[in-house]
Length: 106
Image 1: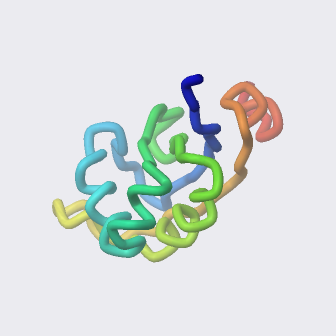
Image 2: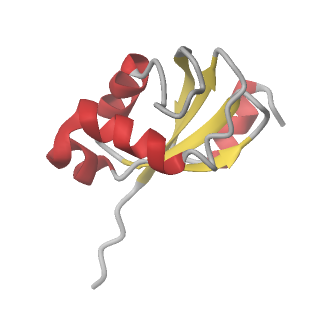
């Protein structure tokens, strides 16, 4: 039997417009520095969708979403000259459809 880990989806917003899909590596390095190697490997966070210039969705393994949310709150820059900003978590859900429906985006 093949085990497929359950996922959680986090809707987040930044205070300034940033393309998080293009800056996936920089965001991953920032999360890694705050979460540590073990926490990052357990959570496996990845930006999967950019909704608008400030809102995006991160996919993570279930159980690691609290660590990802905490690490997102500590990120203030991505190191590529984007300036200082803040990332705020809006909602967490078990599916993308429910996440968008409950947040009123769709």
